[in-house]
Image 1: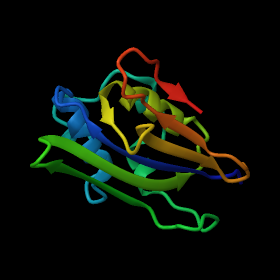
Image 2 (image 1 turned 90 degrees about the vertical axis):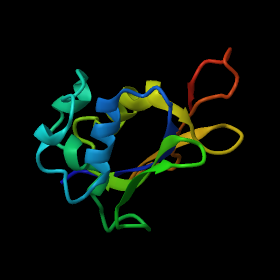
Image 3 (image 1 turned 120 degrees about the vertical axis):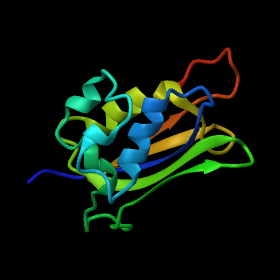
Length: 147
């Protein structure tokens, strides 16, 4: 049957994020509209993530094996900071590395996450004792890190 992997993802997007990336994220976070990718203005970006079978609905998956077992995804435009914000919690069978490929694809557009370390994603495999943390240091001269 396979094990589940949970993703907790939250960030603001850079102000110069291309329109088709914003449209893809709106498509992925809106549960009423994740059936037909032809609705995405500008088409799908050229990335391996979009060749995985579950990319369209990965933000709407859930498993009873996690403490928070109902998915949640939201995207909005913040009028104060003038940028798009995204908040997701979901868990899925990550058979085709959808989660890692998503994080690879979205990474260049992430402006900031949360807190001192600028955390933007936490990924936890169902049988893992330690989650993987994704964050972007604030200093321009530092490399992005995964712990």
